[in-house]
Image 1 (cartoon, rainbow, N blue to C red):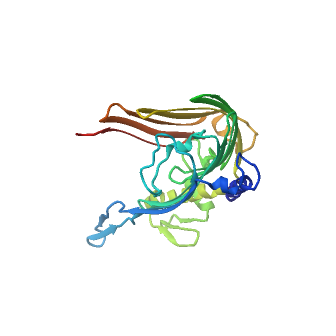
Image 2: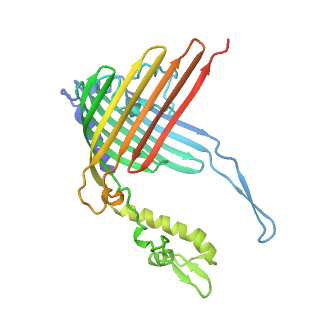
Image 3: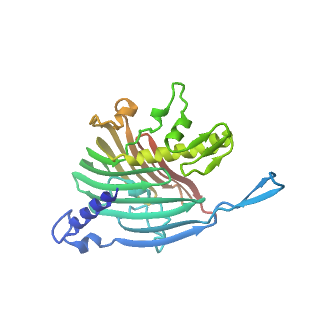
Length: 349
């Protein structure tokens, strides 16, 4: 994926060249009204947990989880919709802008987002990235996007070119999408499964360099160190680690796959001071089958549906009462990631 960032950088630089490109005049216009931000957020993680043992008398061990933190670096140039009246003075890295996922922005022209989040949550570290450049015109849309969501375990680079048919507050689009990702659907353990669905895990471990002394009930790792003195420990602790490492290694050995798909989408935006609705949806009903050994077609036996969408709704029922609902949902290669929020506000006088 290192080349992905280079492609995005070249795309941005080419649009920033001192000539008319992407509807802009020069590099100053490209970055005009954009915001660069860097922020660190942190807080207490889950509380300490005490565990007890009685093997050699009473033993107490305290398991501590390091504090949570989130380091965010980014630069963005995205026009705010009417419902996004910014209350904070600064970007602090905790914002959740659902509208960033919309296909069409508030205005035509070039918009972009480059953001990296390095975070630790409950002792587990994640690296999240979201970068995109999009250009929207009255009758066409072009976009390049790179997404890494460590929490959802999804990573891909996507480009799309779409024809847009505008009907005022609602617009429809159709076009082509190209996605570069690891071969999702590939199961490295499939070749090790027996007819009854179980895994021949001991033989796999031996192939990975482990050694088993059945007579003395001792189990060794590839370095020759003893990792278990019983079959229970071997099966419950060592083998799961062996399988996880094997799957990760085999997946990393494969090249990324380029998937060509048809995309159909819509965007709708309505806003006034009392009620607003912003929704978008994308459907990929057809995917080109290149007959590759690791094509996703081989794992689902035919075509499949990939889709994404979002909804932002708010209504001020009267001067005191208001309701809101916001969220987005994605499903690619049968992998899901989503988030949402909703609530009610009532002002007591």
